[in-house]
Image 1 (cartoon, helix red, strand yellow):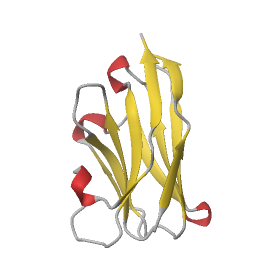
Image 2: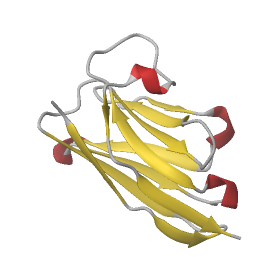
Image 3: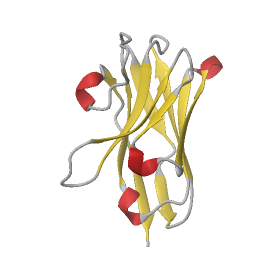
Image 4: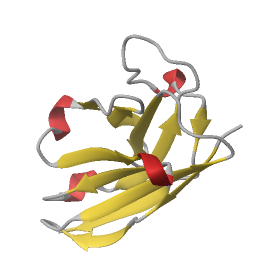
Amino acid sequence: QVQLVESGGGLVQAGGSLRLSCTASGRTFSSYVGWFRQAPGKEREFVAAVTWNTGLTHYANSLTGRFTISRDNAKNTVHLQMNSLKPEDTALYYCAARRLHIMVVPTTPGGYDYWGQGTQVTVSS
C-alpha cells in the first residue's frame, strides 16, 4: 500500500507561481506518478505525469510550457512547478501513482491505483 501526501497549495495572484509536492510512504514509487486537478463542477483532468524509473515527463497539451513535473528519487517525492498561473488553474490538485508499469502513460484517473487527498490551488485575478 502506498500513501500519498500532497503539499504546497495555496492562494496566489494571477501570474504567480506555486510548487506542489507529493511524497509517498509505505513503499517507493514504481511506475507512473501523475498530477490531476478538479475544479468545482468539472471532471478530474490530467495535468502531468512522470515515469519514475526514467524521469520521462508527459503533459496535458494545454499546460505545456507553464507546468513542470520532476522527481526526487532520494526523497521519494514528485514536484509540480506551476508558473504563470491563471484563474482557470484554480482547482483541487491530486497526486496519483500507478502500481504496475504499462507502455503508454495513463492520462485518465482510472489508470492510477493510489491517490492523495488533494491540495487546493486558488488563483485570484
